[in-house]
Length: 496
Image (cartoon, rainbow, N blue to C red; front, side, top):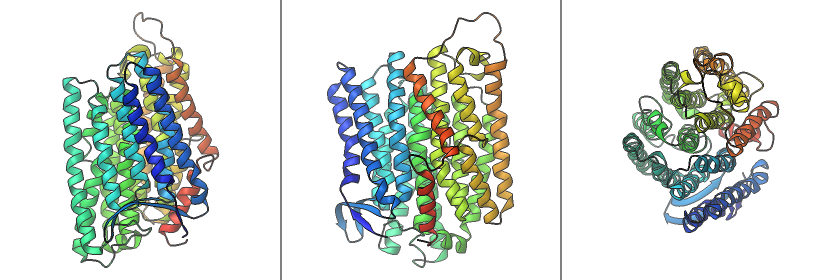
């Protein structure tokens, strides 16, 4: 595989870091300038990342070494096809959620807006760093930056509930980080390297029991951010944060970084052949299958819309890990596609929840009877996003779940096909009542006239809805998610 040495990955990272500094300098007294820098940083970062896409599509990787620390240890940025997929997703959705955030924060006249936009930019600095990390050390550094940057966003409201959620957030994620630190040290001790290699690099470097211990420690560490049960409790608690933060947590940065890291461990540290030999894939698949079913059952009981969406996210994250754990080409392809497609669909649903709150101050599903007739654009977008997460065409969730189902058959594990189908049925069971209440149920008594939220809130969710449909009909359109996932599978399986 040809290597292209370029500083573009570093410049793309600096875009969000510089944007964060300029946001602070603009401050609360110049909100228009502050939000100009937010948008400029987001657009610049996406443009720089997109400019590297032709190299990746040609089968090349883009590498930049920041500093060599020790033999086999460096801070290195490497953009391969899998990293490009995540970087494109996060940077593109940052543009959309920034527009939404401006509308949300201004309409509600939220406090500490400068801190909010600064932390948002720093969170994307961490997320893109995770996407472009060339080794475990670099990934770990940006992984922790992401955790610290999002903490002020979780506690943004500064209420007792928000502070409690923030403490829980740090307790779970920093404990997970300790497991990752241990795993990183053990990996270097065994192999003398921390560089990601498609298909893995730890095989033959230790006893089978020691490698099993290493794998479990890695999954516990990164699984805390991916909200694998029982490491999930921080995620529904964090729904106390403003809705754009919830969208960031679920669709763009935090949990997607967690599941991205889990796939790096499965496919780029251990690899399919080693995991098959160790028998670890079946244990992981069974474990996340329990999370898939239990999370959906809990979602059925939630009246708060954001918490229902939170448990839906927990379910979908484990579906992604299940696809990778099957170790079949179609299963891995479906997992990678679901990272990107779930991002568009889930951010749509959270933006819909935020638009409803801004327009009505309602958060509970039981209070939303008839709201679809008064907010038709918002609730139509919600219905489309929900249909996609259920796996119904013509929304892109159908494509990723189709490949996940094919992956179970390709692996000869039909039991996990039933898990995915059961998950889809449960998705329908807790999403469709929301849609039914919104369009067909009348609210008891007289209610004030409701209209759509401001255009800065509605336009972004319409855009993500349109892309969710576009990627079903043309899964390789614009951002080339399908080609990137396919190329990643080929390199992991040794075809390229």
